[in-house]
Amino acid sequence: GFVHDVCHEHEAVSLCMHRALQLDPGRADAWLFLAETSYRAGDFETTFLAFDRVQTLQPEGQAAEQARTDQSLLARNLRCVLAPRNVWSLEVAKCFLQEEIARVHPTAKPRVFDQVFNSELLDLLRRSVDDLCTWRTKSPRKLCTFWLPRNVRPKTAAEVAGRLLLQLLGEDPEDYEGIEWWCRNQCARMGAHFHYDTAISGCVSEGTAVALHLQRPSWSSVLYLGDIGGPTMVLDQVAADGCDVPSVPPRAYLCTSAANRWLAFPGDLKHGAVSFGLKEPQPNQPRNVILYNYWKRGLRPALPSCGEPTFEDYLPVSSTSPASRHLLAPQTVEDLLQSGL
Image 1 (spheres, one colour):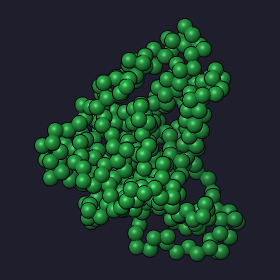
Image 2: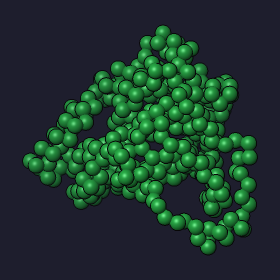
Image 3: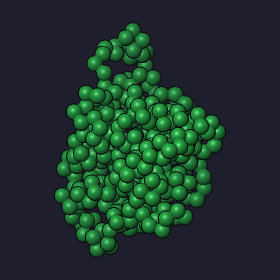
Image 4: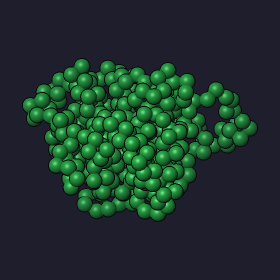
């Protein structure tokens, strides 16, 4: 099962873990692997059961901590479901009357671009997204996000796409320190809890660490690789002194999933993804997206959470990685940078 896991053979991993647990139900590590494969398949009942078993078998330690963290995040994401109900209340009405309802960003609003890439680049993105996403979660480096510095040549289709997308905003790439990016591959009936983008390990400015919660990207964005899944919602709301301002957002922007669509919005706005739940036409099919955060010159997210990926191996576990097959030749990169849009 471990060998199949390193090879990104997810269904084979699931079969091995079921067999291992038939032989020894007390293996906490097997339950943790089973939770991961069940999550990918959209079998959340088994996922929660597996997380519970891990914590029962090993109440303390790294496995239990991972199970608790992932279980809590999954529960939050599953609550982000579109529901047909009236949300107008006296409390909401009072907030609208008492608070300033001008736009948080009078001149910068979310922007949507359709059919952004040619078929060659879009195909490369679709074929690589799952392996790149898997590499991030399994790499011993335990990166939460990837970093592409301004002066480094892209190595993957996802990095080429990130560079090209900035042109659509009419921005000068030299004004940005780099691109923070990561992939998400989750079943369509799951959403993403509402949050503010920030650097998990803090930021570095001119080589000096700066306060964690005060810095946010200039632009956040979502690149949709398919039509499956619910919309992304961006609220006209920012964080200030630990509070949401305004307490009730006067506006929300909704962007539906569509292949080859890109949503970009100011990086300090609160946002999340809402699902159609079990009403989703294909609830267990994957919703593939790539997320890009653009950081202004002189500021970048810090290690260990955000770093430059190699995709070449799983050292010290394995000298190879399936993600390495998506590393592009220099000439291919150059051609895509010239003609990918």
